[in-house]
Amino acid sequence: MDPNPSRFPILSYVMDRLPSLGSKSPTATTAVISDLKSIHIGDPASAQSEIADQMPHLSDPKVIAAMRSAVADVAQARSILTELGDRPDHESVDSAKAKLAAIEAARADVAETELRELAESEEECMAILQLEELHVAYEKLLKDAEERLVRIYRSAEVGDVEEEKEVDDVGDQVDEEVVRILQQASSGTGLDRVDLSDRGLRLLPEDFGQFSGLVQLDLSNNELQVIPDTIGGLEKLEVLNLSTNLLEALPDTIGLLQNLKLLSVSGNKLAALPDSICHCRSLVELDVSFNQLTYLPTNIGYELVNLQKLSVQLNKLRSFPTSVCELRSLVSLDAHFNELRGLPLAFGRLTNLQSLNLADNFTDLTELPDTFGDLTNLKELDLSNNQIHALPDTFFRLENLIKLNLDGNPLVLLPPDVVQQGVGAIRVFMSKRWSDILAEEEKKSMLQVQEQEEAGWLTRSTSWLKDYVSGVSGYLSPKAPEDPILSQPL
Image (cartoon, rainbow, N blue to C red; front, side, top):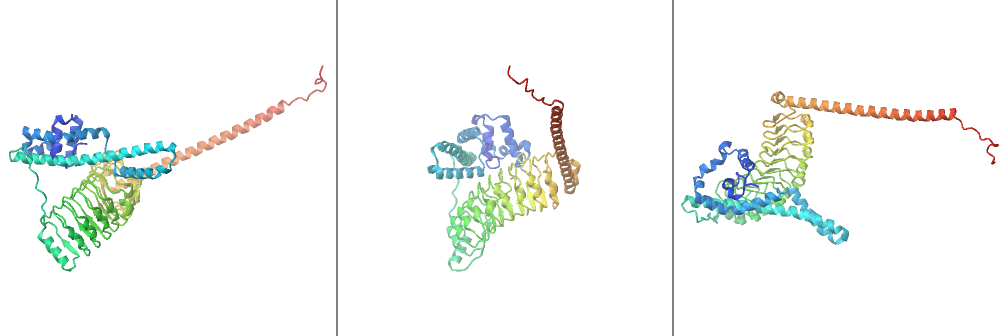
């Protein structure tokens, strides 16, 4: 529940240093230091002191006192969420919403005896949704607190800790080039390509949605915080580059871009993607790297059937939705530097996949599914810096694999000398291991058959012996005929 130092550096520092915000055990402090290590901020031994060196006013008692007051609500919220538990994954939230809708629809037709079961199920779903809402509110609270701390520090720099100087609002001025383009469009001159990258833009006018003939739009490396809903009017748009801006969300109308083939929103502040992005069924390449995503849309795999390249690295993804296994056209998947705890069991369905990067998920990724061996077209695989102890037994099936990185994993079954020899030696080793497993299974199966046959022979022999003994007994001790005289009554 602690603030992530990469997103909330001052808040993380303050909450880690102030015991009055709630007792933090050595384990908690270690976790923060470990988090700093994982994002490679300088020397791990001095990671916590680095921000203090860069911001010397953090040692001022007045600044600390002001910051203590500013983040008290965060400490209280953290304490509550620690008791309630981790944030539910996106699929669980969607499933809970669907169940609630089904319960509401069925309530009128359900017998009174079943109402109690429905009520219990409804309570469980509501609990999941309420926990999700609390975590969403907590994320906003962290963001607001970090902004408060930044204002306090800026006040300290000018010698006035008490007053918080507000950050300047985003300017309303429209770039001259944007005005020229709008005028050109209004004059009837058709435009199919517009490049407004690296112009320091803070605002994109809503009138931009009138360029229905636009095919390519580059708005990268600006300061845009919002994309207007009117962007959905660019019905012919095929390439949209919004990378390296300050976007915290994408408009739902982005799902109207039915011809969009390439979308890049890398290097923004996106916490989630709109579900409507799944309606962009022409997408071939999607780059959402270097954001703050914790999940992907539930139906992303069912609808983006043409997607060939998916880049989700440098986010906070804890899992992939099960639908990702339906991205049958996918050729490249980069998911390094996330918090993945595993892959869906049906991951092997991505049979066209050629490049897969799962590096730097650190302590979270510990194993791969057995279906991993079905990725027979895989050529490049990076599993470095995880906690994988063993490769799946089907690994030898990756016959096209030519580049493999297993560095930084506590591998147990693979001998170090085999790993050093490269992917070919690893494949041979895993193939022999698979053969040994099959031989052992066959041996066990044969023993079971033999035992069953012996048990069946013994049963038949016992039955035959019983019948034989019974016959002999009857022969040796025949029943004597009755004497009619002795049978008469006295």
